[in-house]
Image (cartoon, rainbow, N blue to C red; front, side, top):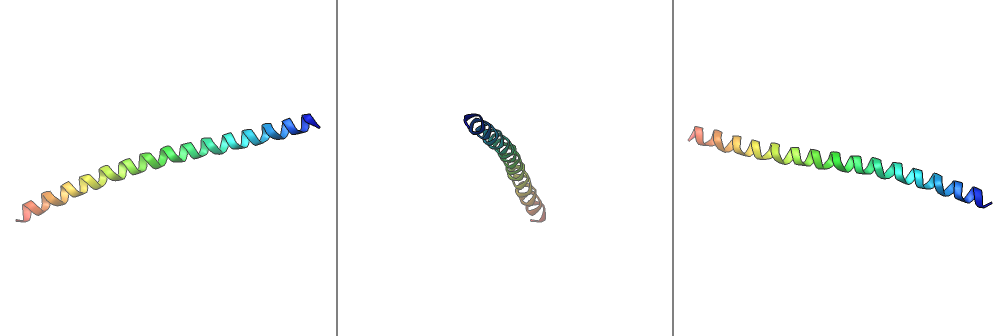
Length: 56
């Protein structure tokens, strides 16, 4: 009985760990994407202001 419970606990822990690693990977990807998006937006804003200055 105790062996079964401990086995179940180990399985649960491994599942949780795998889920957490997946989540952390997704979290890292999200941070990377948002960082890139912010930099891209900054570049676009600079480019738009530059083109506006050229048209004036």
